[in-house]
Amino acid sequence: MSIDPEVIPPSSSAGKNAVSFVPKWAIYGAIGLGVLVVVGMLKALLPLILMGLLIGFIWKQAKTY
Image 1 (cartoon, rainbow, N blue to C red):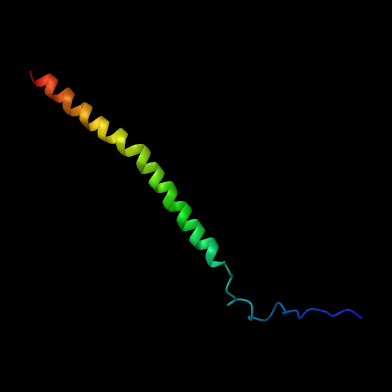
Image 2: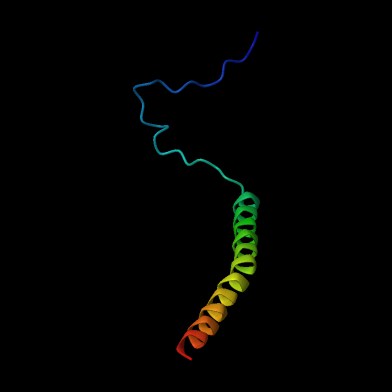
């Protein structure tokens, strides 16, 4: 004889307030990965932005004389 699991009838609202469970390690891992991606992008883009500003400043100074 098998055991039948409890079934919630479709007319019941018992399952509407159920909370989905996400493990904390998954949340912290996603946050950590996001931080690493943002830091990597900043490390790649910041020198390019600064070099562009420096070249623009040099170009502006060269055009004035």
